Length: 177
Image (tube, rainbow, N blue to C red; front, side, top):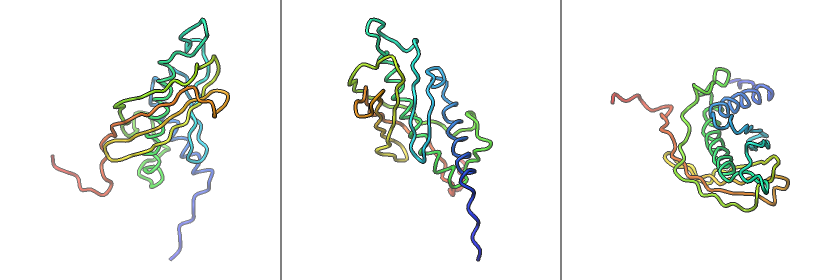
């Protein structure tokens, strides 16, 4: 019995990057904020590039707390969605070549968000990384932190709980109801 030859790594990377791009482009608020997401292996890093529209207090100046919270929330949502999408992508259930924001699986919905503001967000780029701490069929919990110049000095961190979308089991028979 011969084994199927593995795909070239470049093909795998292109498929993963195309899927991540469709996921990020599927959330209009991410586009409004200007957030981009970089993938290295299975780790995602979100970038919030500085823009004057993000300033909440021009006297300091500091990034608005609502922008910081939104950045944390969308980073967490992309992370938990990517974890869901990754499994489908790797087993071939989703074709990344034809994936568009409209054809993506439904996104998890935020149940609650608890933000700890640790220091002012200065007028410069911010970065964030999230980690799924629990993911079940119905709920997921994600921890996320944002920083600017030094990852050891985060500007904010959050815990986000999500209601996971219903997913059809790949091998379950279709129901009549």
